[in-house]
Image (cartoon, rainbow, N blue to C red):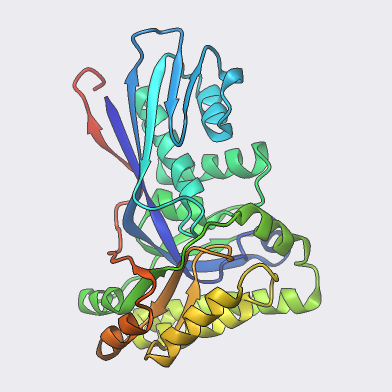
Length: 328
């Protein structure tokens, strides 16, 4: 048996500039961290070598790649020529909740299949190939940040060049300041799931409007400023910059926020949070808040109707976490 895992991510500022419709004209950037919540995939050889067995929210048994219904499974298995295996997926959080689960799945699957073939693959190639599969081959409206965040892991600044190259840089922080930042970030599950692809398609289609372009460019500047402030040790800058980014993000598409999200965000801010945002494309899922320690309990009380998700930052990125000796 082989087991791979790839982390989910929390995006802070600049999201949306990783869409081709934007970065191919203006370049883009974002700042995000991976977290210790993971997508897991386990593989072992089928007794019947003429079958492919896939277990996710349903079970598929196929006799060839073309019969596979799950599009990412089908594309990855076909591209890498893998057959006669059983693969099971598991995750720490629900899909469609704004933590980059689809891309974490693709990255973890590619890592797993390359390991099964006895191949080493770099984090950059994992991310690049995952982007090609999701965006170019399967026609997703997604951007590039999720695949790179899952493959590389850590607190990083991503720069999206007009030619498609992605520059990846760590955000260097003093360990005590990093711990303070981690401690002051709180995540609450508001419920529901969303179709990121639909929201991002609308956002991508409207990127040429001058007001949307200006807002997205300002969000990129906020990402650059946040990197600078964090590296200076000014972790409390996170709150106001998140808030400004969220206010700009809501102008990009009508599907990003709704009354439920606005209510929860307002309750958190009134209770002592200094900023925050809905994670992911928008519409549902997890609410991120930056909360100074003195206000943690008041924010918890204000948002008592929502499930808090404790988390820690991840530093490892995608990896193989178990190799049975028969596969080594």
